[in-house]
Length: 265
Image 1 (cartoon, rainbow, N blue to C red):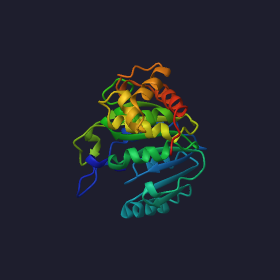
Image 2: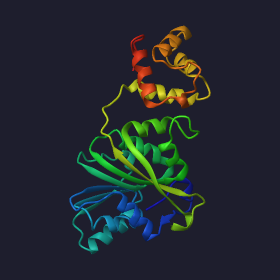
Image 3: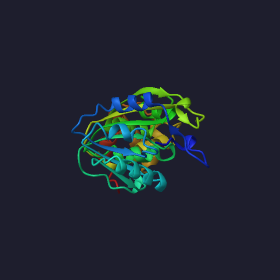
């Protein structure tokens, strides 16, 4: 099980070695004997070896060819029939359309990309991830906080999420220079939203120091008077910054804007 970008050195990897942490991560997923589980980046298998004994079926996707071969050898030697090790880049992997729980120590350099791939899917139920602490803080951030941004809104739209506990660098070999945190996400199975919603949120936070009036005006080249009219209809102060708006605020804003212009999505 490997760590993130700043936890994966150029000439090596930082593997979780603390069995207590491993057991606490798995415990957080509330595994049952009938569960099917997807593990992303099993590495040396500290989680994999525990999960496999507790569930109906486990699929583990490992990008590193040598590590995947070692895991295949281990589970073949022990006669495990309820596990499949897949040597693949998860971002290119087609996730099975079956009810899943997901567990992973996400690599930091692609952690948010993996999260954005998984969260819109409706067939997973629970996900327990370990990430760099500052990343987990962005995932759970609320309006008005410094960490609040696009990924906070994306995560909150699709899930209920909370940080469970921190993981010291001493729990890895070799020890990284950062602290990790474990986060639990529960799927809301939200309906797909207007694609313009996330486009606008992303645009707004690229210019987060601008007022929401300027963000809306520049998004589709609206006249400021029209943008001001839309904000007034939404009961939103045009001089607010994007980081003060909640998900309902953004949704209301996009819904009202749709009444005024036709988007080319």
